[in-house]
Length: 459
Image (cartoon, rainbow, N blue to C red; front, top):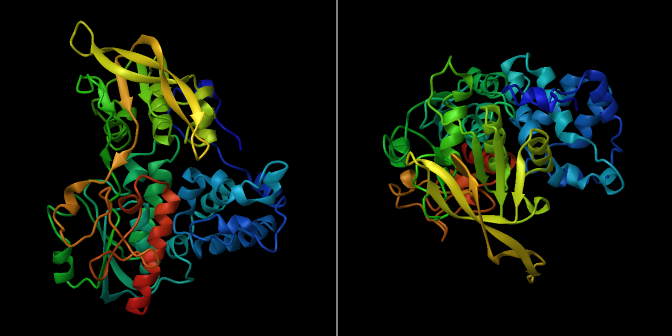
């Protein structure tokens, strides 16, 4: 797929991948072998009929391809951009055994983008016409991230009256505040998916904090027949390193939220304060770390380093994101771990002390754990540090709903077959159940719960 050149894209927040042309998409679709037992479908959490939509695209029938995708996936334009296809659908493609698998995610993105100008009823649901909404079949979704949007799209397309409650002032959850514009455009993609839901009479209530401005019992008292909890896991983790409270040390949550939701990247049109570090260090090896590092480069940092205890090969981030970061000048400082953040002369963050690491012997699972190299400590100048080592469940809603059973990690326990919690007709899915995971897994959980809710309501 064509991309912006690295030297060009580090100076803007425009989308990096430029997308296929029709001829390119058809050529790629024609590589599909149309397996009788497609392993790609087994690897998809929302069970997209992949061979069928690719066959339609190979015949240049974009409308048919889109209809097939939408039969199971409410947000294909988003999934085509941010899902880890290499470990899911594309990971099961038989062509990948000896060469390149079919670029299923890119084809999904192409189909969705091509179809985006169509009618909203076609855009968001797998039904040919907008259904009549039954006000007696009321369902509430808490949170407006990918799991809740999936529930809303599935149920609204079947005639349920869905209301989505969002704690922030913009809709989309992690799709808006967590993923940078250059990976997932907000107005071009996320807003269109949300607007299409509104055309299906899904109601969105902003600035509504579950557990504070309303509770689950309030929703049932208002006539809801079912409630879905999709509030994500937005409480940042820290490393318990001395100096983490210095000015200049951010959690990835705060840093990316300021830039993405607060539009700090679009100064002066949006006057959101953000620290524009010169020497930036990011701690972690996942997609969030890549997002933070690549964002810092676009905000003018002279040096950006990702500090990780293991090697590049062991980083959990998508290979594509790692490659893009390196192309954009991000330095991978592997086999290193922070010992202490130290202030400069102005009292703000000035340097970080790092411990050199090495990989020990493989454990029972075959993974080699990092261990300190004796007496090998060094310092790096850094005026901005971003901690991207994961998140925990946000307790705001959970502390005010004692009827919800939680596991030992503080996440909601659900029935694995229905998504139902310990509270009758209250369902949950996404990161608040699994811990921080992917958009597509959250959508899969939303689809599971939505199917059960629809069954109970007779939709």
